[in-house]
Amino acid sequence: MAAEHVYRYRHASTLTIDRGLALATAGGRAEHPFFFRGFVERADQAAAALLAIAEVARTRYFDAGAAARMRDPVVTSNVSVLRFEAFSACNGVYARFDIDADGLDGELVDWGTTNVDVGDALRAALAGVRRHDPLRLSVGDDEVVVESLDGAVVERKVPLPERWLRGFAEAQIASADMLQVAELAAPAARRTLRDLPRQRTGNRAMFLQPAVGGIRLSRQAASGAASLVGPQRLSAFQRVLPFVESLTVTAPAPRRRIAMAGRTSSEDSLVPTAWTAHLRHARLTLVVSPELYRGFSGEGGVLDALVDADSELATALGDALAGQATLEPAALGSRHGCSEATVVTALRVLGATGRVGHDGATDAYFHRDLPFDRAPLDATQPRLLKARELVADNAVRRRDGAGADVIGEVVSDDTVYTVRQTADGATCTCAWFAKHRGERGPCAHVLAARLAAVRAT
Image 1 (cartoon, rainbow, N blue to C red):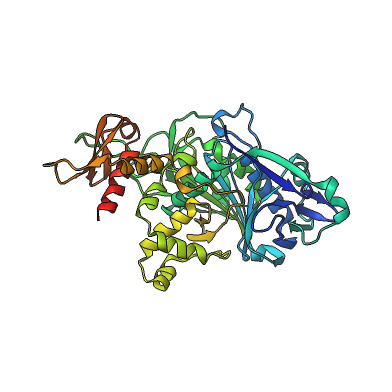
Image 2: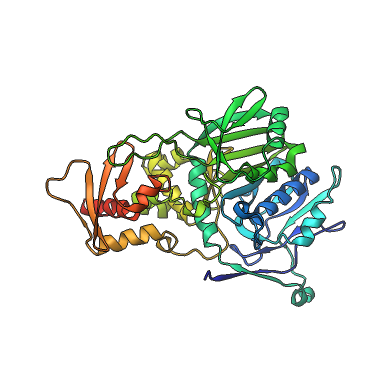
């Protein structure tokens, strides 16, 4: 059973003529932080994007008919950018709405991250916002009305979002490793998003192909084409279609599943894709996992960073976090006397605890400090926990006369697994690796062999 986490709000978020859009907060650096009060440049655009975030947070895309408990989005103030983030109920879609300072007429007064209440009543009110409506936005309270506190507290008990914590870690790694697939101007961007299939297509992959005036989805896999499973998972874009000024699509470089037993792999790996709709002084980004039934919480991409990271550097970087909208690895490397790659690995470790995110539109890391309690890293990464146990039990050994490619042998449950290093990546003789072949990060035996090698040196 998942532990329960309680969000406590002073009041429900509201949208009224006199007060405007008042978003209630809970948690963060302060119990009820106040980040912003002022006007939003485009009321209807902001309302539509917030509804898109709320839609993602309450949807289970692989089983649309199943009931899904609403998770409250989180908002991060980076002082120059206001960010709203959420995961789908199935954890396979990550959504973020960014409003730049130019899209706000007011003052971003503090940095931090907290939950915001987006209930049924607020969603209904947001749906009625029109083009020329003035929209005053208040994120949190900058004053306390004592006489109203007792009757105004709103509590919402939800399962502790550990999957969100792991999902944030994996989504930022996926985003940081992506390259541009397409960039479309307004007409082609709106046409592409409008024409995305909305019907459920099961777990069958479609492939992105450049086409005149947009992107075409094909059932036929072309060499190097990015994949997309479940295009209906991008349906939240329909809410902001009139405001889209351009569209950027990114995906990791093409890769193949790791070969086994000397055989050459003939299968391309399915990959995540990120879709960023550029609005006026704002962006709505949806990142979808490689398959319909794969949530970001189980991708395992952060495991390599957790093994390879310089823990002292990660601690030093973490101590210097103070709401930065842009964390530049090259500059940080110069400051700390290390390489840019070393800094990126340390940032990924901070991302594993929810403290760093990645904005693919600007190709920059940003500070985020999630408002719920963070479990120890090992507790959120079962494979890493198992690997550490194997190393502690001296279960990793090197066989005399083994080939140069053999990293080690790992004894687990009376079975010996051989771990090798190939040009495509590390392999293992376990059933887990045979099933995933490198698509979901290293197995526990590969991690144990690498940890033992680090300890030996």
